[in-house]
Amino acid sequence: MRKDRMFWSTAALSMVFLIHFGFTISTVGTQGVDVCATCHVNATCEEKADGHKVCNCMYGFVGNGRTHCQDKDECQIGANKICGNHTACHNTYGSFYCTCLTGYHPSNNMATFIPNDGTFCDDVDECLVQGICGEGAQCSNIQGSFNCRCQVGYQLENGQEPFRPSQDKSYCTAVDCGPPQSAAHTVRLSFTGTSYLSQAVFGCSEGFRWKSGNTTAVCGAERVWEGPSLVCEEIKCGDPPVFPQATHQWNGSTAVGSRVEYFCNEGLWPMGGEHMSVCGGHGSWTNVTLQCKALCGPAPWLPHAVVEWQNGTVAVHRCQDGYRSRTGSNISLCGPAQTWHAATLVCREVKPPISKAEVFNESCLRWKAEMNGGHHEHYTVQFVGSRAYQKAFQDKQMLVFKSGANRPELCMNLLPGTNYSINITAQTANFSLTISANTSIQAPPVPHVTFRDVEGSCPTLGLHRTIHPQDAISIYQVFVLLLEGKVVFDCSSPHTPHFYGCQEPCQEYVAAEVQLAGTGRKLFFTVGDHQWYGGYYNAPLENGKDYYIILRAVSQWAGVRKQYCVIWAKVKGASYIIESVTLLTGGSIGLVAFIVLMGYSYTWYCKKQ
Ligand SMILES: *[C@@H]1O[C@H](CO)[C@@H](O)[C@H](O)[C@H]1NC(C)=O
Ligand SMILES: *[C@@H]1O[C@H](CO)[C@@H](O)[C@H](O)[C@H]1NC(C)=O
Ligand SMILES: *[C@@H]1O[C@H](CO)[C@@H](O)[C@H](O)[C@H]1NC(C)=O
Ligand SMILES: *[C@@H]1O[C@H](CO)[C@@H](O)[C@H](O)[C@H]1NC(C)=O
Ligand SMILES: *[C@@H]1O[C@H](CO)[C@@H](O)[C@H](O)[C@H]1NC(C)=O
Ligand SMILES: *[C@@H]1O[C@H](CO)[C@@H](O)[C@H](O)[C@H]1NC(C)=O
Ligand SMILES: *[C@@H]1O[C@H](CO)[C@@H](O)[C@H](O)[C@H]1NC(C)=O
Ligand SMILES: *[C@@H]1O[C@H](CO)[C@@H](O)[C@H](O)[C@H]1NC(C)=O
Ligand SMILES: *[C@@H]1O[C@H](CO)[C@@H](O)[C@H](O)[C@H]1NC(C)=O
Ligand SMILES: *[C@@H]1O[C@H](CO)[C@@H](O)[C@H](O)[C@H]1NC(C)=O
Ligand SMILES: *[C@@H]1O[C@H](CO)[C@@H](O)[C@H](O)[C@H]1NC(C)=O
Ligand SMILES: *[C@H]1O[C@H](CO)[C@@H](O)[C@H](O)[C@H]1NC(C)=O
Figure 1 (cartoon, rainbow, N blue to C red):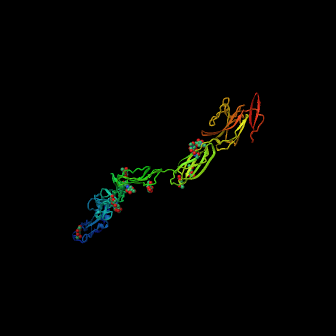
Figure 2: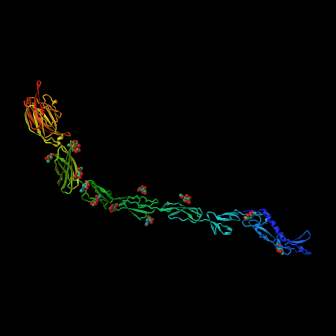
Figure 3: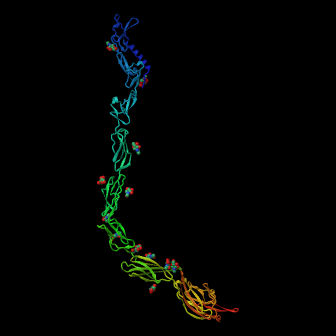
């Protein structure tokens, strides 16, 4: 907006007058003629100081004042220069006037003005005029004019922006998105209109569920709905449940609302409950509670059998563990009369090919054989014997034999005093049985002794024996029995009297005890040699008395004791007078008897060399 200045008007005005005087002054030279009468219509007659009369063209005219007074076009100078900025200059006959250009407003508020009245043309703010751009349009003022543009939510009809409704026939209309379109598998739930920023809310169609995206669509400025981005997926129930007692009829559809109908299997009858399942909105089949019952009742019971499988009309039986059936059917069927035709299998106990094995008479083995085929069986008997008292000992043997007997017997060469593990294997039946058997200990084998009837106080006795595996637990005991009165000797008595423990006269005592382990085949023993043998004192025999020398062989283990006795010698009237040294036996071992006089009593010694 520009305002013209006052000083401009005065400058312009003086210029106008200059021009006026330059061109409108004319003189009338003809005397005697009423000059004034000849003035142009548009001239005035002026009487000069000297009486001269001249015709002067009127203001705004140029000419001689008599014949010519033509209009002077002031506007030719230029409106801007004469009227000011943003003006239009209008020439009139003999004058001119100014108007403001469209879009500008004269400060005098009149339609016209002349420049020297101080009026200027100011920019008009057209936007102050309500509705100048029309509905939905935004006005923006510019110098001398204004621009219209459509507001957000409005769109331009005809032409281009910016526009002026008066000249462009353009106008704004409200945006209309039209009815919103549903995306696939969606339904519109609410809708506020079709105008800008209207909203429409969508949901998934039945049988579909939200998978992703926004459910709201918004009418945008571009006249299109933005959204919804909602993506719906189909709900599927998968395969319907299966019931062992029922079959189902189903068209294969897993979509929501699909139906499956259940029917009891043949031979079973529906006993109530729901027989229809529907694929529900949550993607699962509803409960089927159908109950089917067999009319035959529970499967029949068979001795020693279990029901392997049953479905109301059919039951399959199986012999329980340890039982077997060789004949008969294992299937029970529910008959038309609603009773079971029971399976015919007969379950018999499966007996092991070898059972009840035992050792008898210390060395024989027998067992019960289950000859399932009636053929002969090949048996292998392995036995391993061990002894706690003889770590190095092992008795390992194997016997192979063939038998068709129901109770085979086999005698083996088992050693006494041994713990055996016996393993019997039936080769054909591929069956093994292991038992343990302990043989009892025996008395040591009887040594070879020669009974001797001797005289003298130091008889030396000898024996030959066999070395025996049981030696580790065997001993020899030498008993001295005084033959006086009634003599009873009990070989099985565990009693082993010491010489110093018996009362006078000493009837019976052990003179020596010898461990057989480590003892050789030959053994010599001199009775009454004053030595200690195995904790027993070999006391001198009394002079003049008769004795029996008894050898007791004992084996003892784990509380069991076996013994054997032999009379080794009879000693008569033992004498302490020995006159010479006598070698009694061969070999390196000899016995020498001495008589030593000590004070008043005589004591004899028997000495080994
Ligand atoms: C008229 O307009 C011109 C150019 O736009 C400017 O230079 C001048 O100052 C204006 N005159 C007045 C009196 O405003
Ligand atoms: C004189 O001036 C008027 C306007 O002021 C005009 O209409 C008229 O025609 C003029 N007369 C002649 C003879 O030029
Ligand atoms: C869904 O879109 C509407 C409209 O654009 C918006 O207001 C809302 O926040 C959006 N919702 C989500 C969860 O993004
Ligand atoms: C299956 O049955 C359902 C109704 O239970 C129906 O809606 C669907 O169209 C059927 N589908 C086919 C493949 O026949
Ligand atoms: C039981 O099983 C048999 C054989 O599989 C079949 O023939 C019969 O229909 C079934 N009965 C029931 C009630 O399911
Ligand atoms: C029933 O008998 C058949 C034929 O004899 C056999 O194949 C099947 O294994 C048996 N079933 C059972 C559970 O013993
Ligand atoms: C085994 O001992 C029994 C007594 O238990 C006896 O009758 C039988 O003759 C003995 N057999 C052998 C072979 O020794
Ligand atoms: C046999 O075994 C028993 C028990 O283990 C044991 O007490 C006994 O000493 C053993 N006998 C032999 C001769 O090894
Ligand atoms: C019994 O002997 C058989 C055949 O030699 C063998 O396979 C099995 O392992 C043995 N069993 C025992 C307990 O020693
Ligand atoms: C014998 O039985 C054993 C198991 O007791 C088995 O490992 C082996 O294969 C069987 N041998 C034969 C020949 O059947
Ligand atoms: C035989 O000896 C074994 C050990 O080898 C032992 O377990 C078992 O009890 C003994 N049996 C008898 C009758 O002594
Ligand atoms: C039916 O099925 C639903 C799951 O689909 C389960 O929660 C409910 O316990 C079932 N009811 C019966 C009676 O089987």
